[in-house]
Amino acid sequence: MSVAALIDPVADGSGMTSLRTRERLTKRLMAAGIVDETVIGALRQVPRHLFVEEALASRAYEDSALPIGWGQTISQPYMVARMTQALLAAGPVQTVLEIGTGCGYQTAVLAALVRRVYSLERIASLQARAEQRLKALKLRNVRLRHADGCAGWPEYAPFDGILITAAAHGIPRRLAEQLAPGGCMVLPIDSGRGQVLVRLTRQRRGRRLGFRHEVLEPVTFVPLLEGVA
Ligand code: SAH
Image 1 (tube, rainbow, N blue to C red):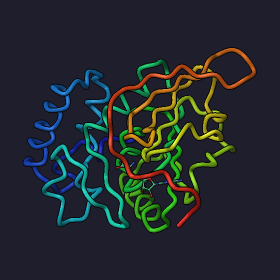
Image 2: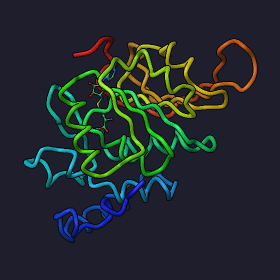
Image 3: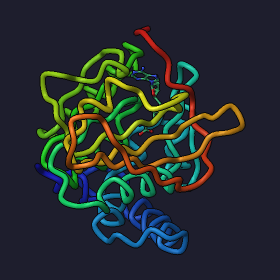
């Protein structure tokens, strides 16, 4: 993929200020425990200000979630880095399915790190905008679709990794079935008493679906909803 267009702060019109604020953010991420240098590199490169409305662009390199319309948010950079790091830590990952494209920021970060990213979004307007943005950034290794992510994307399964950016009430069964043996799924799970970020690793052997569970940390995400809008 071409990340050149993402890296050059002058080419994207945002100037050196943006480069400095991006550096400040990456330092903050490192201090918060993001140790994977490839993940840090991807967050440094991807121009987050292009994923929010112009009025919010000056806040794009703060470590906070921001509204993107339709009651949804662009995830906090720390959370994008944390989830990406957790997904890639288990071993080589070539294909990732993301559920909840939103503005497409996490999609772009993944696209800088793996061979192919598939991403599903249930809100048509958000999906269309994300598609435009990622096309403008010339990311050719992403495939997006307006669809209910709970059904996954069977045509391209199995995936080495699945990343869900909305909170589920349990392990979404159809998604679990589309994970390759040895692959990881990172998702927020809402237990009814709050949400936690969980990493599930699918066992390599056996015909039944078996997973190793790891609870990573408490989180706050919008809910994973069924059906399209
Ligand atoms: N990945 C985004 C975060 C998006 S917020 C980022 O980089 O910032 C979560 C998104 O999940 C919302 O856009 C919401 O519409 C979407 N979503 C919720 N349930 C969904 C489902 N069943 N299928 C697909 N997308 C879903």
